[in-house]
Image 1 (cartoon, rainbow, N blue to C red):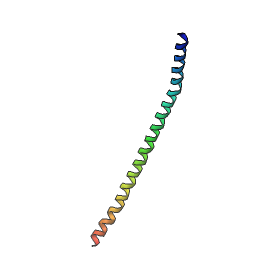
Image 2: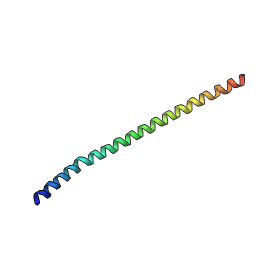
Image 3: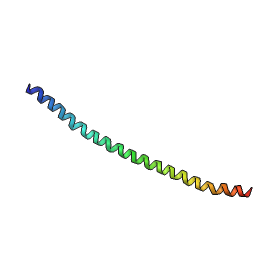
Image 4: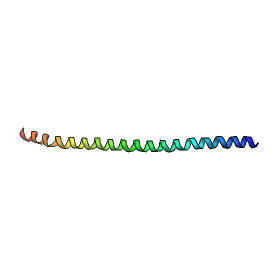
Length: 66
């Protein structure tokens, strides 16, 4: 009976030692991915806003000339 308990303890211990770092690194990588995704989305939004601001005066001036 002691052998079975020792084997079970060893299996659970090895699984814990291997799984915990994998979960930690997966969480870190997911967080970094989310940060990069948010920054890219902010940059695209800023570029779109800038493009709209640049186009607005051109459209207003051409409307006045007609």
